[in-house]
Amino acid sequence: MPHAAPIDSSPDEHAPHGEHAFDMVTADEFKSAFREHPGGVALITADAGNGPVALTATSVASVSADPPLLVFSVSALSSSAPTLTTADTVVVHLLGADDLPLAQLGATSGIDRFADASAWTRLVTGEPVFHGVPRWIRARVVNRFESGGSTVIVAHAVQVNLPEEPSDRGLVYLNRQWHHLGEHSRITDV
Amino acid sequence: MPHAAPIDSSPDEHAPHGEHAFDMVTADEFKSAFREHPGGVALITADAGNGPVALTATSVASVSADPPLLVFSVSALSSSAPTLTTADTVVVHLLGADDLPLAQLGATSGIDRFADASAWTRLVTGEPVFHGVPRWIRARVVNRFESGGSTVIVAHAVQVNLPEEPSDRGLVYLNRQWHHLGEHSRITDV
Image (cartoon, rainbow over all chains, first blue to last red; front, side, top):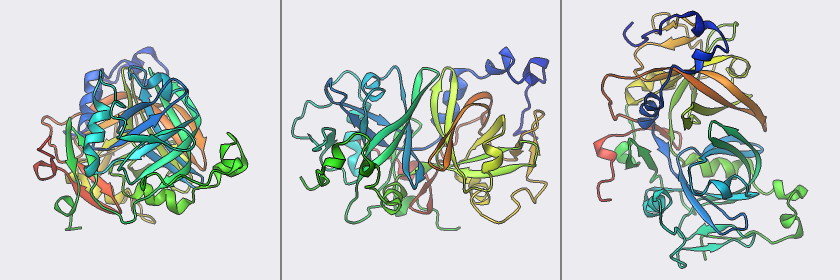
């Protein structure tokens, strides 16, 4: 059973809320596990009144279609956290491979992500939106809760922009590298 | 500004909690937006005392590395929902392309996903785990909340199993098809 590698079956382990039960996984181990878990890429923007922020995130997922709810999380260490954890609404740009420069913009620290005034505009409702991204969702935050130095945010879609034609040019982040999807990556023998 | 397509700026839209503010996005529109958002693939298993369940999910994401927290969501329509929304612990198998048969198993309705007794075992702590998956995380549920017919679940990793060598053979679900990642999908001109 080489895959299982059961842990030491110490008494603490079996205590449902034993102190040691939460101390067995190091941050490095956890990061290693997720480093190889592919993530779709989104650029999340908002403005809570203190200027626009933008953050590239791989944590965006659909929770429910009816009502239309999505979830994502934001680390308190992110420069966008103060705004994203207080804004009433956000814009989630769902990025394809053609949007890679934007993904990189939102993932680069120490720059003004809105320096190029020709790259973005505001919706009539005020949120920043970047030009050229065919798929984005404006969503109203309906729930947020702190989880270990990050905030998990659930938001209700109130506006969706879709491309006229689907592109299938998916963008994925894996193991610190960018990947693009298409016919070349499709598994055909299933 | 062809990308922006602002909505009608009706009075209801500007009401922060106006009734119509939550009625503008249809389930079909929302599904269309996320259909082209690539998702890493995980098989989540648990047993709350009524037998093992397994569910393929693309919603698994890392929330925090220290403490090691992850999030996923489960639709109430899933046959696994009654167990996954009550279990104290879960096992999240992070699947690679080599694990595609398991991804399909957990995504197929109306079958006994544990019928092949040689395909899985139990950890000493009781959770079902499938053979041959090199990366999995046992996690204790620390938070769950209802969101529109689904449950968002945050869990604290208490055990991590890692492969001896990273494979880079990522598995992704996009637009109802499976994709695999590798050198062929890597974007190199960045």
